[in-house]
Length: 282
Image (cartoon, rainbow, N blue to C red):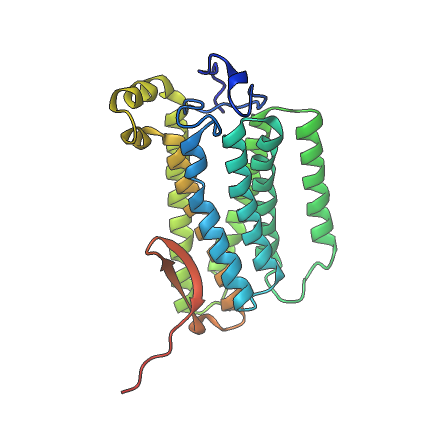
């Protein structure tokens, strides 16, 4: 399910990071833009995920939203930074920094949706069990099944579990109708972005050689339009961002504070939760 291509670099030792050691190499031509960055556009497009995550961390700390909410945004931040490191170097160690945090942030979201109350219902049983499962998966992936398909399947199962609990929270009677409309919008946008990104990710894998010929024909900077793995990064950043906004907002709704918060877009494109501005009185 991942790309394994022959390196388009004739002498990998002449570039800063040297020979690729990762088990994956995506469709973008290696070191086409810089001798210091293996896949320039795949690094640059992760700015979207990092920015949305930083806004989430800032908002949750500023408005005292709790450790669980802060943790999921920090997880998203680590995914973005890890992905940048992986695409910049194409080393196996940085590949793990990209892939493993994806599992962890999804597990954190799942936990936050199950333990929606301030006081955990399952005590230490649930977090310890989830940590043990993720530890087993991590060790299996690193030392036994070093196959990206294993990671992709496990991630998909974890994401489905989180999605099912997210859907369950949409129908909770403790959520007001106004908050439910916001949550449904997050749920729909999150899944639309993720599924669209997954489609583009597959197109990038299937039609790589054709996409490379298009990029060669149009040249810089228009070749960025045909960097489909980069578009996957952008779409999954929004998909993940909207789903984490759902986790964040449902916690606000559970304590009846949804009327105090709203969603705004930083620079018009980066969504985050913030306090509503007081209405002006003439």
